[in-house]
Length: 172
Image 1 (spheres, rainbow, N blue to C red):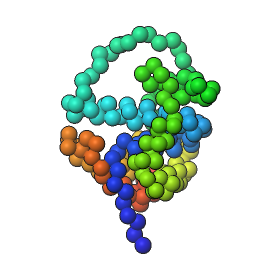
Image 2 (cartoon, one colour; image 1 turned 90 degrees about the vertical axis):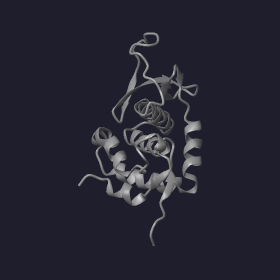
Image 3 (cartoon, rainbow, N blue to C red; image 1 turned 120 degrees about the vertical axis):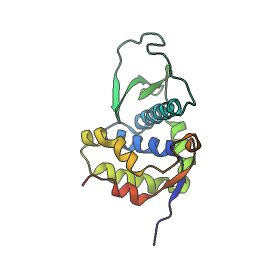
Image 4 (spheres, one colour; image 1 turned 60 degrees about the vertical axis):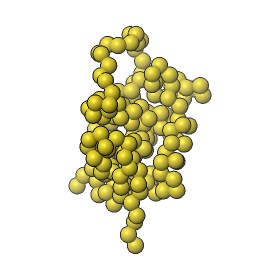
């Protein structure tokens, strides 16, 4: 029986993948979801600037921040703050990025196939040492992400996510 592809845009795919990678690195599930939302948001803003849909912010904009703990995930250093429950969460725009909205977003995006997609991603992640996974994780995502047009017409467009491509993304 052939699996049917999942119609989804890239943002939730990157969000789920980043959460899986963060958990493989040892982060608690809430921290992983929080970090993942910042990774996906950063990637979306970069693409928006590249497509001319958003302007670059001048370097050094905003107040100087005191030294704080950071987590490195998929090539990005993300500041951490303490959430209301005491858990470490990613800092976004001066606030803790809560995990619950990210969890709901993923549930809406993948529907009943969320566990199936997560399972395929976890199998891929489990096949690599955590440090190697974090180092090449974004390239792995690029190997299985849904195909959408690279121009403005691809912004927010849904593509086909195929589980077989996730499984085949492992380095040989």
